[in-house]
Amino acid sequence: MNKKSLFNILRGAISIGLILVLLWIMRGSLGQVILTIKKINKVLLFAAFGFFLFSYFLLGIRFRLIMAVQRLMVNLREAVSLTLIGQFFSNFLPTTIGGDLVKAFYASQKTGKKLACLATVIFDRILGTTTVIITMFILSIFVKRPPHAGSIKTFVIACLAATGAIFFIVFSKRMARIISFLKPLFRRFKLEDKIKSVYDIIYNYKRHPRPVIKAVLASFALQFCVFYSGYLLVKGFGFDVPILMVFLLLTIISTVSMAPSINGLGVREGAFVLLFGPLMTKEGAFAFSILWDGFTLAASLLGGLIYLLSKQYRIGKGEISYDR
Image (cartoon, rainbow, N blue to C red):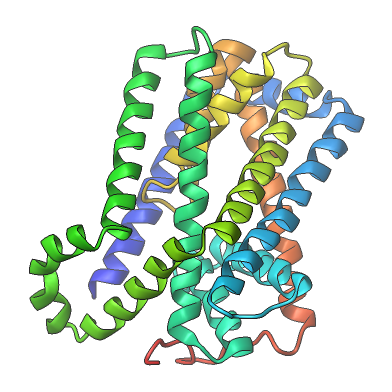
């Protein structure tokens, strides 16, 4: 069994284990959870899903802006389609081919530049994560007395420090030279040239501030849509939680969901109950997490439908590689 298989088994074990623990904790309240979902305000439910789905349109805009910097031209329809297809692979085939890798592969089919597309997808992920961390930091300043305030403060500071370190490494040639001791490792796996090419492509974004700023603005806009969707769900359940509090806790949940697992499964639901439980009961928080997962899966299924109906989106065995 290779290391990749072991890692996938570990991810699955973490997700399944956390879900089982959560179900055990909620074992006496599952009926109330179902009742809470049934009683949600349907108008606010559909409005919430509309905002959630619109965020993928904005995600496509961000991806297109980032692609254009490298002269990788895709139209908006293609950018949104690639985003949704990547989401489909991330959620429904998480142990085989990552959604980001699929998105990079199909973008390269359009542009003919594999490594450039891979680097673009990596930068897109870095940019998205960074704007979430910045939003979380700003909100933590203005939101008073959130649940588990001390732990949240520590978490925010740690995330901010980690983000700063990543940006310093990525966009500082001096730091890149400092960590050049890793070259023998890269050379051993025949990755040195590829990693250098990807690094140079990502570093090139430093020279194009205008489109990057536009991409950052698109990122903040899509975050607003996603988190406002969550606020509408909270209102739909009938709970009165301040909007900035909802936004702050959702940024934290988005970040912790990156922990090793099957696309955040188990980690995310546990975080909902832990953070929103004190504000809207643990039954309401668990119901919130179920609908949030439902929104994500619905968007993923839309990506799957695009994948099935579009002939150009087909992956054969062994097709995905980044030799060029």
